[in-house]
Image: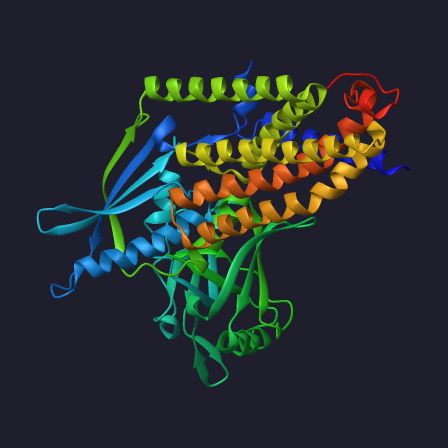
Length: 467
C-alpha cells in the first residue's frame, strides 16, 4: 500500500476516534443538535459554575499550628483532585473567627457528595485478618473473648454487588505464628486503577521494600483464608488468599466502576490527611464570569478565527483552504482528546487552545513558503510539495518540541489553572504537528492538480498561472 494511502487512513481513523469521544454520551444522557458535539467537554467554574465546599479541621490539640496544618491539608487535597481530573479546582484557606477552614471550589459538579467523599476522608488503609462473618442487617455485637481486640465492619463490596449486608470480624493485628504484624497504607508505594479483560476494573498495589516482605509473610501464612482490605472503617474487599505473593505487587478486585477504582487508588496513593475534615458549608454557584462576558469571548474568538481563515485563503489560494481544513481538524482533535481524558476546560485552557491555533497556522505557512521556493526552482507541483515538506519538517518539529517542553514544565510544576492551560497547550501542539505534517500533506497530495505554479511562465514551463 502506498504511503499516501496509509496516511489518509490514519488521518480518517484519528478524527473519527475524536468524534466518537465527542459524541458518545458518557453521562448516559444523549444531547441533541450542536450541543451534542461539546456535551462531553467539562467546563470550569468560571464558565459553567460548580460547587463550593467548606470544611473545618477537627483537631483537639490547642497548641497545633492551624495555619501549617491547613497547608498540609491543602497539599494532600490538591494531589487528590489533580489525580482524578479536577485540575481546575481551587483550594484555599479562609478564616471563621480565629479558626482556619478549607474552602474548595470545584467546577461543573452537580453532585457535590462525590467530591465530598474524596476530600473528607483521612484515607486510612490497612490489611486485616478476617476472623468471622455474618450476613444480617444489624451490626453484630457478640464476639469470642479471644477476639476482644477485633471489630465488626461492614463489607461494602457485598452490599454493592450481591445486595446483602455482610459484617466481618476483623483484626488489624495479624498473627503469623507467635508474631504479631501490622500492614497499613504507609507500606504501599503506589496504587492505580487498571483494566483487566476478565475481571473488569481493578486496583493495582505496589508495596515498598518493607511492605513487600511483610505482605509476602502475611499471604504465605493466610493461604485459603480471607484477608480484608479496610479503608476508613469499611471493608473494601475481603478476598481469599489463594497463594503467597512474594513479588510486592497485588491486585484488588471487586467489580469496581472506573470512578470507584480511581477514587480508592487516589485515596491510597495521595497520602493520609493529617486531620478529619467536617463539612460546614455547601453551595452551588453559577458561572463566575457571567453569560455576557462568556458570549463576548466566544464571539471574539470566532471572529478572530474567521479573519485568520480568510487571510490564509487570500494569500495562499487553495493551499490556504488546506490550512483552514487542517485548523478545523486540529480543533476537533483537541476537543476529542479533552473529552477522552475528561479534562476540565476554563478560560486559561481556552487561551491554550487559541495558542495552538497559531501554531497550526504557523506550521502551514512555513511549509507553504518552502513549497513556493521549490516551485521557483522549476519543479512540478507534486515534487514541490514533497520537497517543501522535506525541508520544513525538522524546523516545525524543533519549534513545537520547545513549546511542548515548556508545557510539560508548567504541568509538572504548576497547580490548578496552570495545569489546565498546560494540558490544552500540550495536546494542541502535538495535534498541530500531526495535522500539519500528516493531514495537510495528505490533502495537498490528493488535490495537487488544484495548485497552480504562478512561477511557471517565467520559468518557461506549462503549469499555468495561479496561486
